[in-house]
Amino acid sequence: MMTSLSMTTHKKIIIKSEDVENFSKLSGDVNPIHIDKEYTRRTFYGRPIVHGALATIRCLGELLYPKIATTHIQLININFKQPVFCDEVCFLKQTTSQNKIRFELCDNTQTLISASLTLKDTSIPSLNNTTDLLPPTNNFSVNSHSHNPNEMDEIQITKFYSSSPPPFNSHFLNNLQGSLSTPIPIPLLYALCGSSYSVGMRCPGLYSILANLKIQFGDIETSQNYHCRSLLFRHNIVKLEMKHSHFSATIDAFFRPKPLITTNFEKVLNVTPHLTDKKRSLVVGGSRGIGALAVKLLVASGFKTVFTFAQSEGTASELAKNIKANGYSVEYQKLTISEKSNVPLASIKGAPFDILLYCATPPLVFNHGSWDEALYQKYYHMYVNGLKKLLQIKNSSLLTKGATVIIPSTQAINEKTPGLNEYIRAKEQAEKKLSTFCSTKHWKIRIKRLPILPTDLTNRPGAVFNNDEVKEVCSLLGIQGLARVNPTFYAK
Image (cartoon, rainbow, N blue to C red; front, top):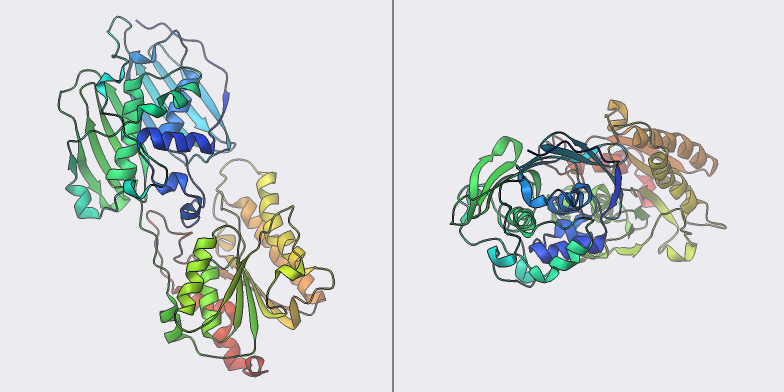
């Protein structure tokens, strides 16, 4: 029987963006949630996530001793708990027993992946470590339109059955094996790659990610197939089963909700009064989410509006086209709020402005561990220093005298949502410090803690929205309230 192994030390792992692209070509899983930065800007995570199968392969390559043949793995059970992001430091923790290896991949605060491996008796013949078991080589190109993932609805998922094997591009095999401390046998690689392809490209396809994966090795049956075993509507979980001549796998995957269709400009026109033709507004971070809806409302109300984006020019362009298609005008430009950025006045079109809405925000990170000062400083810079830097331009005339600075916030501050301590503290400091700063400049400041609204940033499995986003953002902007209380504000 397998003898007891000594415990290894913790190891550092970084999965690079180019590793993800190579894995996409190896496995055929070219789902944009892994490789398209602009696409993922509109998802809850805000940036590409590493394939769960690739993260597992990297862990296996690090923790398995060369003297313990990985071909003697009998069973592997993997739980994908949190996303792994490209180019970020993770830590591999390993414990062992007589015939089991357990490992966890963690960041500084939480477990991302946990897994257990059951090892065979070494007297059992190992799997044939050749490419003979695999389907013919296929060539994949990242972002190729010929390999778009499916977008299945619930009925299509429950009826899914395929007898064609998942592809495997052996041309890119050496690239992956060369990045591992210990080579992984091809049958195990194929099982992991096939699982990734099946979920990300076939069923349920787009908007889905792995949740759990269990692979049993051994002679199973000669026919190959993979199919849906069940669909749990309540939890947005699809259960798949894959069979191969040398392994079987059961897969749980989150059936991600499709991105929300945000309120279009035509609807905004129908509910927003036209209030002014002379006022100007600037929306920082206006290409998506609350910022994008605010841009539509301000334009419909008659404001000459400029909005900025940080990364996704395509998304900004789509918003502008939607507005201009209805006979209205809007301007947009790139503006990056970072620690090293300087914001020259010449880069801001249309100044001076009567309203400044500041929606710039970094990706939201849940931290369930101890206080993370670096994370807090990241938030603080964006919400406090970033806006002050914008407003403190030397000899600036960015805003008119008596202009209104609007800072949207969230009810998570009132609710003290677990895992958001650094975010909450930074937001509280922003409300306090910016109120004082704006009063010294004779600018009005409006701060409103909004409920969770249906945007592409909040949309995730199980999300429930009970609020009217148009009504809430109108209240944030003071469009209806100011029109009643002080209509001359818009007429000047």
